[in-house]
Image (cartoon, rainbow, N blue to C red; front, top):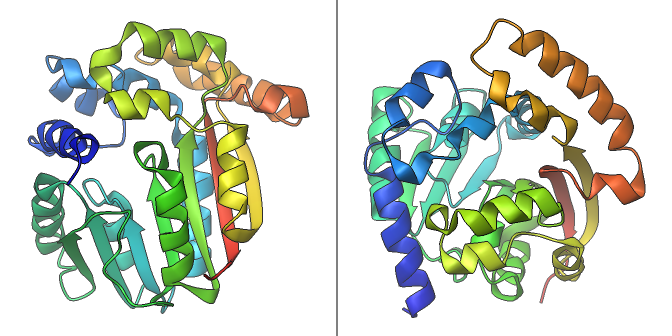
Length: 268
């Protein structure tokens, strides 16, 4: 295994060793407040809109489906689809700590008969061709070499299947500056491979259909107010601003996140 992947394993083993929640709440932020690796957790206070959008797609596609949770982290979405009608869910991750956490959570949730988890290299999937009806990932692709990962995803997805992805974007100058000032929060490879328009050129080489939805630009302004009484009102207003701004082709790529759906896998 090359040095890049060893660095990713070490970083994510450390990140997951305390089973921190991946979804923001005041209580979750309190639990990680003394951990420097979670210093950017506060920004996820504004994320609910994109999560709801992503989960609506999960609900649309998960019933009676065989699902791959690609680089599953602590398994939030694996358990979500397992509890909403999935026939089988397999989560894979390069971090054995993540897989241990996922197995414990599945056992606690009574979902072991549906959701299983394996340590696996995401760029060399150990599944036969056309294994899954549906696949999902959250914040993973910028940790990978897309030229190796995307052919594997297209290979294991059934011809009529689809995949839902949530990723951060790399064009916004202020967000790029923040990342540059906080190198300890990510691996060197991750810092250099946040998704850009050019990343989607690679993705389009392996999937015939790509549907993009952009989130979180003006709403970033609500982050400092996340623990005040005005937060919910401010967030609602800024979401309305985003609903207008992020329709504009030149503005939408300045968003923090994009949720996208892949289908029509191109085999071989």
